[in-house]
Image (cartoon, rainbow, N blue to C red):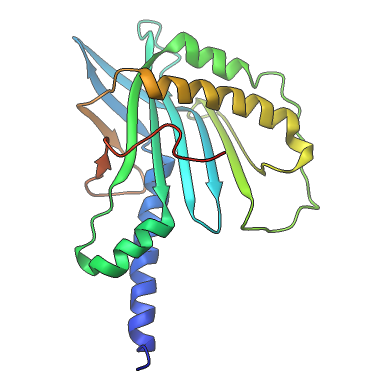
Length: 218
């Protein structure tokens, strides 16, 4: 028996729609709100680290939400979200339109002073643009995004981890990532928050029990 090409294309289109939503959810909300004790927390994506393994479609994004211009706000929130495309694609094939994706995730409170320390790690960074690298979906790709001012001061860089030109950047990135891993494994989890997205509408389904800080083999 041969598969119906129209049915195959329908399944691919359906998964591509899901994957587009996942991409927006991984990158995170534009604004994060949380009722912290008697204070109301508001922050945007100040620092974001992203690891991706292309052909497996495995991604983890760790983003710190804060407001460095509010001196009364001495804490920020670290949001970690993971996606395993191979596992989720199999679920989509099995569950079809009944599929409801759940993102393994964890949210923790960290001091804003630590966020500043992490930002300082990249202060004296010297970067080059490598125009000779070739497309290779089997390699690990890293991303760094810093948004000190959401209007006029944004930096973003994406590179292949194994590229020797970026050894200094890799070392700084890894140092911050490792510190995040330790905190995500031991810190109190933040709940009862709300998020505001610019490119996604609908309910976000997080699985706070499924997340593990060492789930991604680096």
